[in-house]
Length: 135
Image (cartoon, rainbow, N blue to C red; front, side, top):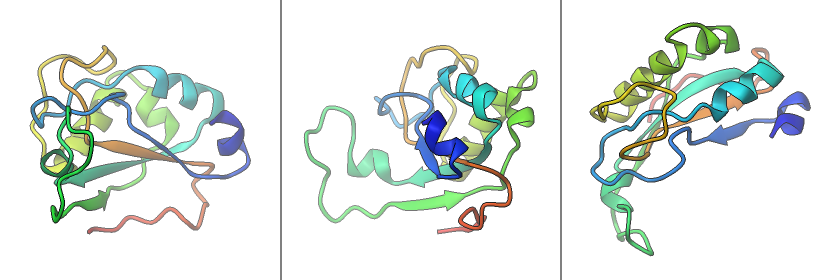
């Protein structure tokens, strides 16, 4: 991932590392912070709505005919996410975008629930492929 980001490519990261057991957005793991320290990539908070209903944990295949949508938020700099409370601020933004309740726990610890939210990392803020939009 580091090489791809340094080449200006986009990388999608699911910072919880697993799917949700109950539809809540769990704490983010700290691997995202290491990636940002190495690359200074821009983070685009992204919410995925409907994925828990379409593909809950424990199912081998998604349920048919369930609508999902992806909503992109305003980009955050690596410095913002790396600052004190930055990972939790990112988590809150993803929760708002995805319409999810935040599970108890602080950002950066391994999840007690699991994920539906994601973050997209951009090789740089001038990347023309990064646009805030709704869906």
